[in-house]
Every structure is written in C-alpha cells, then in structure tokens.
Image 1 (cartoon, rainbow, N blue to C red):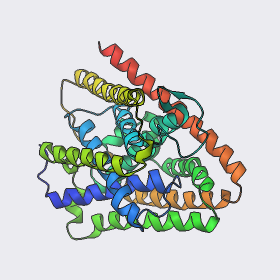
Image 2: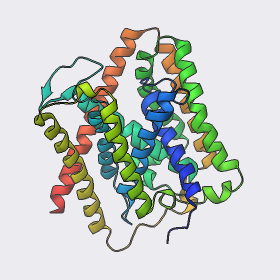
Image 3: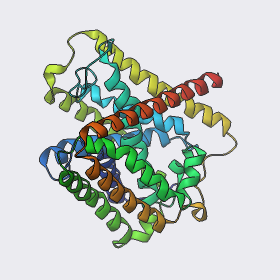
Image 4: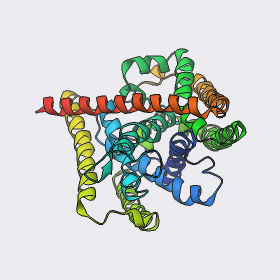
Length: 353
C-alpha cells in the first residue's frame, strides 16, 4: 500500500525532478547555459520540463506493475514531441541543416530530439538520478538493460558516469563560446539541483523523505489529472506565444506529429500491457533497501559526472571542428540506439498479440 505523502513533499520532489531534467537536457547540451538564473528559464523552461517529467512518469508508472525500459523510453519520446507545438523545431528547425522533410517534419531534427536527446536526457537520466538520490526505491534502475544496472551497483558506476560525461560533453563544447563559459554554465547550474538534493536529505524530515519510494512521490490520480490539465494549458499558451509564425498552416505536418504521438503512446501502452500479462502473478514490489546502491557512492558519482562534464566541455570548447565531429558521432549513436529501442518495443507489442 502506498504511503500517505503530504503534497508539499511531493511538490519538493517534483521541483527536484524538474531541475534535473533541465540540467541534463538544456544545460548539458548547451541549449540554455543558465536556465536557473534568468526569467525565461524560470518561467518557461523549468515549468515545461517539470510538468513533462512528472506527468509522464505518473502516466507510465501508474499501473502497479514493473515498468519495462521500452515503456520509459517511449514516454521520453513523447516528451520530445513538445518540440512540435511549443518550439516548432520539428516543423521549422532553428539549428543544423534543414535537410530532408517528410510529411512536413524534418527527419534529422526529429530523430535527434525524439529518438535520442529527450528520451535519454530529459526523461530517463533525470528520473534515474532523482529516484536513486532521493528515494528508497530503484525501479528505474531495475528497468535499465542488465549491464547498466550492474554497473550502477558497483564501483564501475564511476567509469559509467565519466563515459557519459564525455559522450554528452562534446555537445556542450560545441555550444559554449569559451572554456570559462562552459565551466560557469555547468557548475553554477549543477549547484541548483545539488542544493535541492542536499536539502531533501539533510533538512528536518530528511530521513522520512529518503525512505519513500518514487511511486509514493508521484501524483495520485487527481493530482495527475491536474498536472495533465496544466501541461495542456501550458502547451497551448506557449504554442501561441513562441514562434507562432512557424506553426504549419496546412494539415499534413500536424497529422505527421499526431501520428508520432499515437505511435509512441501506443507502444508505451502496448509494452505495459505485455508486462502486466507477463507479471500477472503479483503486482510490482519495491526493491528491498539492502539491494539499493549505496547513496554515498551515488552522490560521489554525481559529483564526478558534473566535474567530468565541465572538464570535457571546457577542454574541447576551443576546438569546434573536432567537438562538432564528435558530437555528430554521439548523436548518430544515440539516434541508432533510440531507433533500436523503438523497434524492440514494436516487436514486443506484436508478440503480445
């Protein structure tokens, strides 16, 4: 039975998840170097990411069953589709060569954002970090591919976070004008979720908060409905206010985006139903505390990740051509991984029938 959790405790957790999502998706990639220190970041970027990560985590984890990795990925892909109606980047790119468009959506930008960046950086990474640092559960960790889960439970976590920092840091280097700018952006922005995590664990009531599970801290049904309405209203408002001139005036580009929403929502539901059928003998039970990675080691790994990300992005910042080539390779690898996971989800859904 889920614990009764005060709304203020949930709001605190949701804020931390939102700041982690902003850090991984916007700061680490260089799109928004100082989102916690300007009005645009506080009034637009932070609400956007917070509403998305909380609502999608609620939606995909609401069934009382173990959540497959493919379902989490598909929820992250849905996250990435905000780049249609809010930023319009899928329809009218603001970066990179526009290249090939199919059905009114640009293939390269859509693949980068929907198959790679947002599923991993805006959703999976912050949800994993938030659950492991804030709670007593490890459901997101259990959903990861086995080799990643094993690494997170041992000292190999330090190798994993350094490798991740290198993989991500090349993009930050491309988008940072100077090494000092890269350092200032990463260190000052990481301080915000870092301070909030510290307060969560060390402020009065920290032991009780850290003893909760992620499911305890996600919205209940009524709260999830409210957040869904807020997210819809936010999408409509920002869709009208941000680059309204880039909104397609014909139906085909909208149909293409609706088809992508239907695809990834349908895949998420399908793999969840398959998991429910497979695990029908018993509902999901939280992982015992003894099986969790040591929080102290995870905190140290988080610090190593931030330091490595800052070092890599600062070191490569003066070498734009090399950083750009590495970022392109990383992006292609990420898109290939995302496509493979999407195909795996399709296969799982087909086998269910």
